[in-house]
Length: 365
Image 1 (spheres, helix red, strand yellow):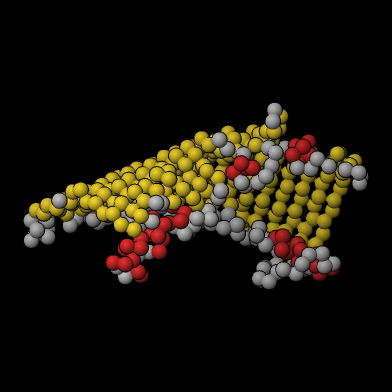
Image 2 (cartoon, rainbow, N blue to C red):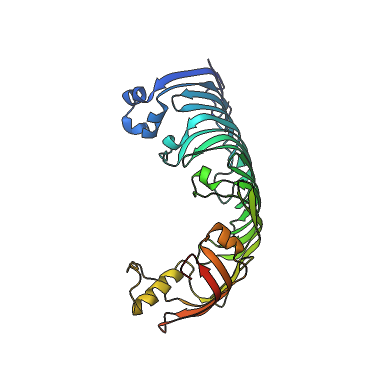
């Protein structure tokens, strides 16, 4: 049924459409309309049935809709106010919806089941304010079916605050994060309690161990070239069967002054330091390029121009027990190990000094 109030007065026009019902398919729509008007992604819907109500005026609309299709179901209860700025609120639910196929990203995303509530204002990303809550029951991502995730998001003109809780068999984590995108260089601060991470089950990395840690980070930048700040890991646990090994502390501090970058790494296993005029994403290329000047040990793959790298570096091993148990079981003994040196491509210099005491590796040493 369709009801109109003040149909000849656009300012006061009110409409109310009840019991809207459409039963169609992608092929049928393409037969009725020009095929170019129907996005090809809609083929995923197959046969679809849409029902609902629509009411409002020229300045606002309220939509209550239910979509049943071969690609899953969608329920929506949304209100939109066409004011300046625009306001929109409501809730949307997806039930085993083929989100990846609809977005032409089915190699990454599969079926999704979730409920989302939102109350937002403006459409300009730099001006959006409001809140959103997402209850994710399941989502197929990169071959794994994630379950039970909650997201609470607050938006305030390019400042985003998020609280995330995941209670999946392979991933349990509580995360609080704040991102300030108002400045030229974004700033992100976060704390996380990672209780359980099974990288093998998630398809990220095949490993015998599961992980747990407490993370704290405060970083500023938008690329490896200009990022600064700190990242801390505390009480990191590596568990295999009934055995748990612990890395008490690991800290990375990245700073920059007078165009010189400094990276300090401190942990139970080793301390490392890197200081100079270098780009983190170019340093390895600089070292390989310098070595190739004297002995071609690496393929000549530096097709893109990279700036000359200058850096002093040092490494001091402290306790190899965890390193040995987790990554290098062939390393039987290493009492002390220090490494220091520098690279300066502008002067064609690459120096390194290594001091090792009482090392035993497999049957070779």
